[in-house]
Image (cartoon, rainbow, N blue to C red; front, side, top):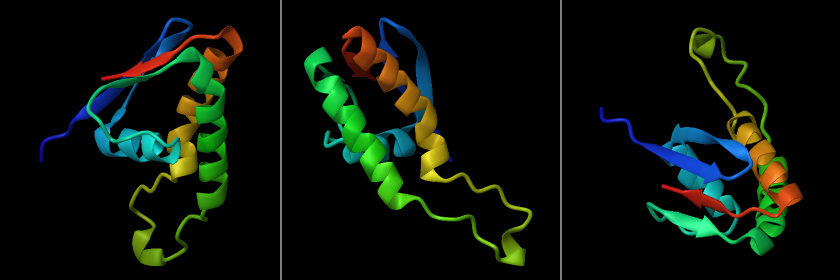
Length: 101
């Protein structure tokens, strides 16, 4: 199985590397296409952050309580999205755009 990654970059925060599938899901939550590369202008970052947090809040689900799954790792989209929320928060505060590749 080939793992692919997406890297988010901005001038005010360390780059964030995510599994491509998770990154594209989060981008869709913000209203952006699942393009391989792209950018969000600084003026649009606060709105993208608002969409992301609203979508994650709407999708919060509890961990499975099935005993069969006790040995398997499961990470919610809320947990996967938290670094990106912090990333976008800092970009919004400083008026920086965001790029992904």
